[in-house]
Length: 330
Picture 1 (cartoon, rainbow, N blue to C red):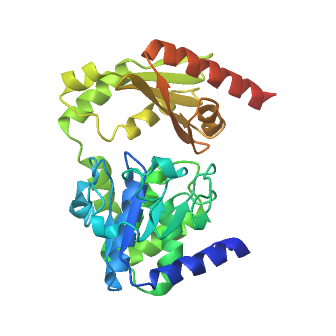
Picture 2 (cartoon, helix red, strand yellow; picture 1 turned 180 degrees about the vertical axis):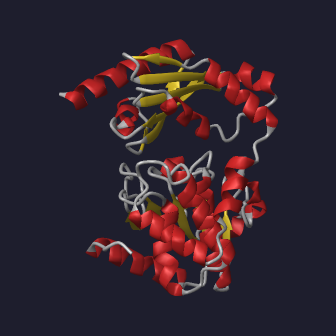
């Protein structure tokens, strides 16, 4: 296990102390949850329930594909029950509290907010903050928090494994290190199935999604001397493919497979705006690019919402990419 700073060790102690309370507990995370947010949140729920506490996971958007198979995914609530207002809230994988997928005012009314995250731009909004940008995933932080309790079931271990697996791109991204792989091995020893979970996440794709992926890839072009790949996803494409467009975050990474590309961009229509997913092979800090435009994330994966239409958003984005890349080369 990684060495802890004095602040991190104190935060862990406080969080475990909070978990000893009677509850109930509210667990929330960001909108459009990924495998890390869902896996971490559901794992914490099952761990608290195993200790006799009531814990509810709330996300206004529900559970997107392909994560419906996760243990207790069918128990995620769309709204906060009235009797949970004013209780202790755990907010996971959410750098800014306003991005949590709960109704306005819910977290403001919480008796205590525990903020657990690995985003470098986290604003430390919690009453207790455990923020570790060096961690590959929140699932890794939760695992290290709970490992010594001896209360990690096979279901909890599977949830945390999914979180670590998906936030490292199947242990392929640059944030994969010995710390993550040690934790993954320990989770396997506790009952997580690498092949079964990888197949459930990556190997059971709806036909509509594969059709949509083909359409997205057909739009891919390179810019900035071949260093940037740009792909587009429109509402019309989703309709033609017969897909809702759920779980499209994985599509953003395909542009990185193009030889010579350092940054991949996926621009997709969302309401009247354009949501952009930025992915890097690690040489370019896409969090810096997204931050210039009002978004955020990690060095290798970030996002931002821009005004439409797509062409104007594309121009702004490429300008920001070019300026950032020039600054990094200077």
